Length: 127
Image 1: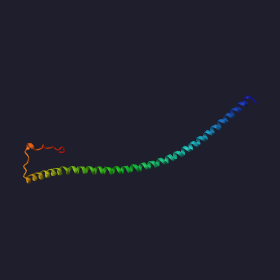
Image 2: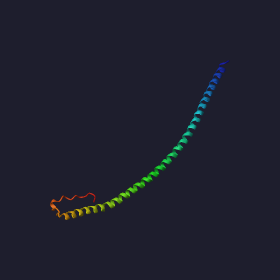
Image 3: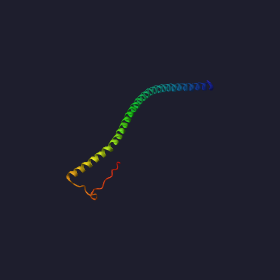
Image 4: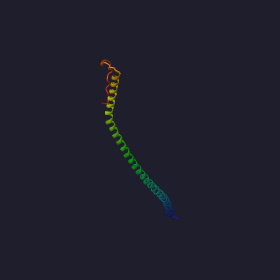
């Protein structure tokens, strides 16, 4: 065998080894891609389920927000009504208390104290 024949055999052997190695890499890559495709399918399925759950949660939250908004509006209306009623009621109660004290003093024959002995009037801050 000549030197060129030996080099041809060595080259053929190296090429064969490279082809076998490349085939093994391709088989491993094919398996990996197959596993990746299966994982992506599972991920897609789970993501679609999660989006459905999220949509349902958002719809529930929207319903609850509307409910809370109605409650807040009702509470504001009640507060406005309470303020509208409270001022005249408080004035009427104060007037009634004053009249009953004056009537009681008149029945007992007690004269009102002179102005200098009367306690100072308090001003109400809720005018």
